[in-house]
Amino acid sequence: MIPGPVESPEEIIEAFNGQTIAHYGKEFRNLYLETTEMLSRVLGSEKALSFLIPGSGSVALETIGATFCNSRNCIVINNGHFGDRLYDVSSKYSLNVDQVFFKPGEIIDLGRVENQLKKKKYDLIWMVHVDTSIGILNPIREVATLAKKYDCEFYIDAIASSAIEKIRMDEWGIDGIATASQKGFSCPAGLGMVTLNEKLIKNIKSLPASKSWYTDLKVWLDYYYDWNDWHPYPVTLPTNIVKALAKSLEILETKGVENRLVFHKNVSRKLIKSIRLLGLDTFIPENHIAHGLTPVNTLGKFLATDFVSFLKDKFAIQIGGSLDEKMKPVLFRIGHMSEKQCETKNLVSVISALGVFMKLKGIKVSISEAIEALL
Image (cartoon, rainbow, N blue to C red; front, side):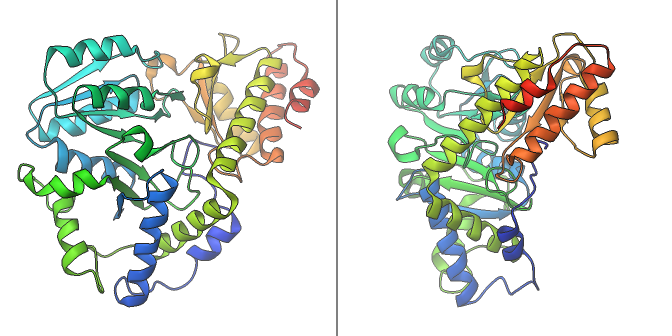
């Protein structure tokens, strides 16, 4: 029950299992291209081009940094641990990176963002959609509007939001999206994915020469065009994970992306209600909480680190603690990014264990009421 990697449903594991097949040739080439097209559609684009890159979500971020931040004026909007990562990545490739910095979990003030955009001409804006370190859902649609107003490219880290939160790439004017296989797509870890709109693809050759080869999308585009009939990518791909991703996207499109988003919202709402019935609260306001994980504030009633250890030792359930040393005593994070994590029995197990732990600490709680909220 951590915020990724998640447990995969059996049909995705079935697609993943089996002998590794060749990563080239007509059969796998067709599967790869069909999978990238499905990914673009799930992210809200009929025209974008997607790339599947071996590695974690961070290789997708590195790819955006190496290709688009290189020697350009960049601005990072940062309100969490993974906002720090965007700043670190972009700073490797450009000496001209500014950030609009907020405290971890602080709601983004669009006025402050616009004030910075008025001060200087930027080539691009980059931000995290869902920062799992604090469980916050950030306003990408509104920032996309600002990016268009100030003639900036707009990129998002959607590693923890894809297939969980609403993303409309074409409609909202998002230029590039980085995501990964192991969270909302419910696949094993091993693929970073990058999706680019048509305009970026057309203009990519005009960008400064990259300091990378592996994560330079100009290289990937060369193979996409020149080797398209049998090997439209420059490296060996983890074919089993691509097969799993193809199955995941097929399920998403069959059941309906909107239905999946509503499902996650309902689970989030029930879990928050259950936590409050135990006398605890969320770490940030409910209308800014991501729908794939819930950040719980102990309100000083017990040490969050003690509960994380208790849950793993006594119930064999693993959740996330805080990534920020200062917040470790008061914050823990329950992941529910996959349908398997969201099964009622799993949510009830976590809440029951939390209630038992609190009772052992001498805190009066009604476990039955908290469980009822999940049913």
